[in-house]
Length: 282
Image 1 (cartoon, helix red, strand yellow):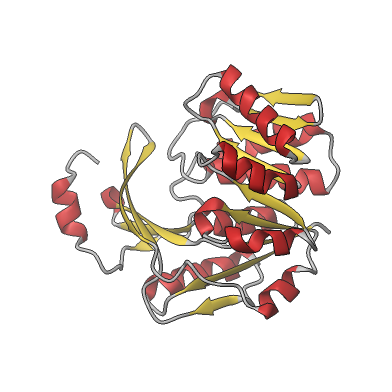
Image 2: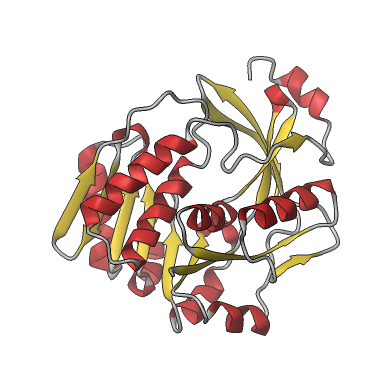
């Protein structure tokens, strides 16, 4: 069985229009999707001791994700308040809370038992990724933070390097895939939202369109695509096969609210009513 651990960020995504918070965050989402695809997964991260933390822990447990290295710390669980326009997300405000944690020796030892480890740029763990890559295949999500300096430092140790170019041209996306591969990534994934995705490996480029669907909420679609691509690469699936599966899975994620669902009433340390008044169109 494919075994993939995710180490890093988590958050509760708070939807103003629904008064509902959903578990989320790049790394948390990936751990859930890997499990849904049939793999064994674990999430390594930190939450507080509030209502939001219990939502995250219970959702991970319900999905069958190993939470033996999910720690509870004093302080708030990370949250992000989100509005929507035409089914697409609009970020209103956020608080990283205790999610910016430092892995300990037990965490590093634990993830060595997995086929790959995923870390995202929003996790604040860049100083630790070389250590992870020394003993595991490293999956790293640059999101839209891919300066030449960061690519040159991180891509060479990546099994899979991912980045987002959802609002850019196909030529730009192809160039970005080339930059990541040229910098040293074994595989390079560029997600393009409604335009599909491009996967690079050596001199080869593989491309798929987005799967047509009725879009309810786009949050988590990119994380779904990364998770299914990583899962397929570890299983040694053919590139086009895994990309088509990833496109289909990402479309399914767009069909419901929240990245991984498991919604509950918003309970965070911010005046949600005041935000609704300030953003009446969301």
